[in-house]
Image 1: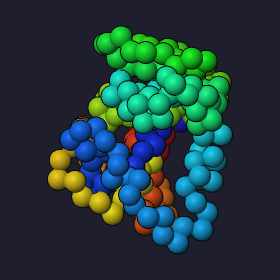
Image 2 (image 1 turned 45 degrees about the vertical axis):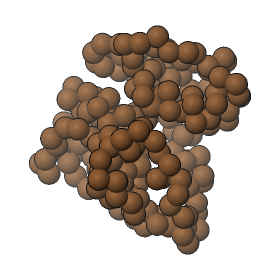
Image 3 (image 1 turned 60 degrees about the vertical axis):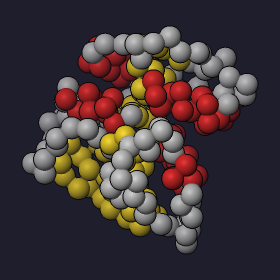
Length: 194
């Protein structure tokens, strides 16, 4: 059975990007003694993903950081043929050859379409935190898989700008991954989980 998962990284003080929407802090963290490696874990994760959702800020960051308008092949290297829904109220540039669907409005109708397209695979909410929060508000977010970096920013884009209490979350797993702490929380009442 598929799950809708917010899979992301955060700082120790709960930010997924700095106040300039940069992730430089993330790439500065040394890998440490991580024997399996981020790339192998990500390959396992993405193999089970059948649909992707992201907000406009995340999309613009990915496009800019990877220079995807000049190098559209990089999209396929990272995400393959997985269809992606980009939530935005603005006109954004499309990446040549990528299966992108620009949408706006309520996440419930879009989630139904994503679930159908995913055909039993998982839905990955890349970000941002507010988009993941909208899925949580609608009872559609099943898991939060978060890697916590040994970094503090003091300000920036919050991990999940919603109030979720311990009665709504269950810690499913926690492990050390190099310099990161990886935790998975399941949400109660979402998609029949927990």
